[in-house]
View 1 (cartoon, one colour):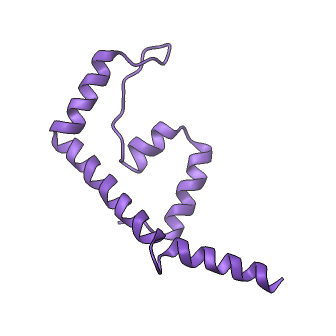
View 2 (view 1 turned 135 degrees about the horizontal axis):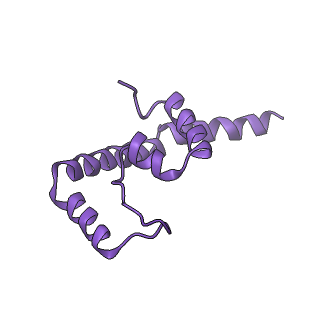
Length: 100
């Protein structure tokens, strides 16, 4: 299984984001959203939106999405915290500017 929080995965996601429609990335690959059925004109009906909100709130698939989003949120908080990967990377960048 791929570690979704690794640097390699983040880079791959960034490249895919540029190349793919966000819907494909968020629904099919990251699994942090539910697909909405669109009309030919790419609009979403109120009934469809209601179905997906209910699915997100009241179903097993919705619970899986919510759990995955919580895990990603927690990982992002850790990255921004003291000693986190974002802080460390920023400190390294600042130090590289000082050396120049």
